[in-house]
Amino acid sequence: MENQYIIKGGTPLHGEVNISGAKNAALGILAAAIMTDETVVIDNLPNVRDINVLLDAIEGIGATVNRISPHAVEINGSTISSMTIDYDSIRKIRASYYLLGALLGKYRRAQVALPGGCDIGSRPIDQHLKGFRALGASVNIEYGMINTEADQLRGNHIFLDVVSVGATINIMLASCMAEGKTIIENAAKEPHIVDVANFLNSMGAEIKGAGTDKIRITGVQRLHTSEYSIIPDQIEAGTFMIAAAATKGDVLIKNVIPKHLEAISVKLIEIGATVEEFDDAVRVSASQRLRHSQIKTLPYPGFPTDMQPQIATLLALSEGTSTVTESIFENRFKYVDELTRMGASIKVEGNVAIIEGVEGFTGTTISAPDLRAGAALVVAGLVSEGYTTVDSIKYIERGYENFEDKLNALGASMEKIPVDDERAVQKFKLKVG
Ligand code: EPZ
Image (cartoon, rainbow, N blue to C red; front, side):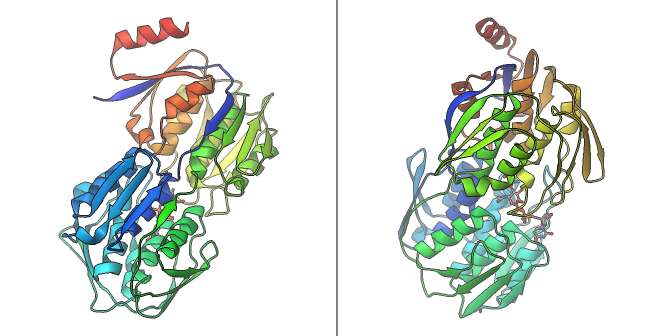
């Protein structure tokens, strides 16, 4: 049964929220966990759909997956019996292609369906494959499958033509048990790259320089057991920061690494919000209408593309003309039409959104086009006059744990209800008044 959110906007968010583990770090870490035959324990796992789907794919190849709690899992890769990840898994979760690097690195062969484009654009994986080939693997694409195999993987000096999170992680996975040294130049520097490297190192890998653009990997013979806790989710935290500012609220966002949020904090301060940093928390508040700005998405430490729809939503309510340039993905402005239906004034020209700030939004029925845009539309609903329903929330549930509960605990009025359930709508309206 499909669900939707119904939101009554207009309440400033107040209070404290705890941020879950980082989805995009967890995806790499879960794939890495199959690379040892010993049992690995992973904690601070976000309980979101993408993670559960990847765990199914990992179980599907024969690994033993034991969910100790909603936020912890034990994985044992010694029972793996298949080297094949089919299109069904890849279609549900693109990141199951991390199993390509993990299986190739461990067993010297893998067969994984080639992912297609997705909701945010065409997403080639040529850099991943270039990396595998540089390590000495053969890579052939036939009947929609990537077949990769190597008698021996040998370290190499690899220059990425584009900064890619996925390619950097996949090459780390494939090379950490290769013969000799691998160097990845022009590597991605996102916090989740560092977390995957730290996890692999905790299993005995020798990876240095993660978090810089030059990662050096010395191959080891084998990896061993580890107990590891995933870092907090930078994008979930950033989304709550924007929600606090957009609703003119005051929220303490806990269990974060403030350093990872700097690009977002700096922008919020620039447009007039207050951001206070603590050791493992940030407090965001705003009391008046914010100002316009210019934003361009860039690889870390630049402004994250995964925060682009959320900040654009905030700027759509801020005073003056703002521009938001999307430089990572080609199709990440699909939410603009929905925001326009709520009263925003945004024109997209190529990869630039030109935003004329409006005083407020009004609620209507909108549809989440993808994960982050979906979250941005929820934020828009929280500040709109009247009721907003957001459809296709399955996208939002891919990456936000208990989104509605966390927002309601901050004073929002929203509920998850079945699509087309008029009675549930009426009940909600009666409840919130
Ligand atoms: C990761 O995607 C994230 N996903 C995305 O998060 C995020 O938007 C993106 O990084 C950018 O930060 C995961 O970590 C699972 P890329 P990824 O490879 O690895 C081009 C979310 O909302 N490219 O860094 O696929 C590519 O087309 C999601 O949580 C190539 O040309 O991103 C893009 O323009 C969505 N060839 C750019 O590089 C390649 O071989 C960056 O992509 C690989 C990428």
